[in-house]
Length: 466
Ligand SMILES: Nc1nc2c(ncn2[C@@H]2O[C@H](COP(=O)(O)OP(=O)(O)OP(=O)(O)O)[C@@H](O)[C@H]2O)c(=O)[nH]1
Ligand SMILES: [Zn+2]
Image (cartoon, rainbow, N blue to C red; front, side, top):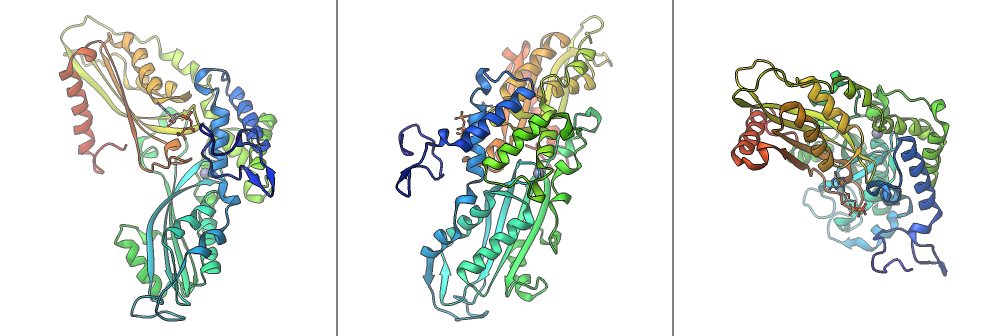
């Protein structure tokens, strides 16, 4: 089957005729098969049924996402740059004042994603590039993004990514100088400890700003760098936070600080599965930066095993509504953080859950208590999930405990929406489940949604986190 046949994967991988030989279709390539086998093993280790409808295609989706996300190893900067150098008047060499060649050119806000070599999760990169063209030629603007992609689509560390982009442009375009600033955002890591599951760790990301400079941009205290930074400040980039002299991923990736316990001796088969994924992506698992990667990856993944929280929930499940039910009033528990893992791509999604229910007027007693609600949210979050199911399960579990009238809203960011082919940076998903009175009473629903809105609007950083 050819790469362009209908229904075939739309992947920019080396598929089809190459050197006169017919390459195997993507799904039959040994690397794809090896990743699928490894993912199947990992799913089984999480106590999942690999033939269940929702996840039976997951090994293939993960293989596709990972190979697509690391396709940069096969791309060549030269192929993009050479055809897009256009003659333009100006200085032949150095920096001039009159614009044209010799004047500073800044391309800002190029959104990309890359894979963290420390933990194998995707991270968001907003790339800004400044350069001073030389030799009477300028580079086509789209090529800055293409070149960034060549290096972003690999297992990376932010500083190395900035250096790679900078030196490739310097080498192939030969300008007077290149400056690169990257704003990188990495998701936080979940904690199974309910008490440390604060909203703060779910808002925002672990952030890092890195830079690299060559030629006339080698000295970051120069006026030219100052001008470049000004152009970034116009767009709200906080360049004061720039990490100088290289900053290590160790200080950045939250997997390093994660408290989850897993040691490679506990499950050497799982470790070998991740090592085989690294190899299939064309990486050397013995490269020093990658040695601890399988352990870190497994640390976060094991948070989502099926049985993990069963006991905690059993302990609190016996809570009952006490007392006689009188007039009921709306009771809300808002902005409860949750973590979950998308069962389609094995990538985290995380956000907040809001719960509303009616309970007896005048009673000071909250029939279920916020810690029980947090446990329920936690229980249905820490699984391989889809957001709609999680929302419904929380509502159905709460319903008998609160007398039947319950509304649940979940708002989440999905890592699977920033990576792979889709790359919808900053998107978010809201889901709602209603039972009892909330199914038929529009004003009750509106009252609850308004409560979410007013509560979050009062917060200093205004609005919902998602
Ligand atoms: N409804 C729903 N879909 C989800 C959730 N998490 C991930 N998905 C989607 O699962 C779908 C899987 O689609 P497939 O076509 O089988 O896989 P894919 O080729 O990786 O999909 P895309 O490349 O995203 O089009 C995608 O549309 C994802 O966005 C979730 O919580 N709820
Ligand atoms: Zn990481």
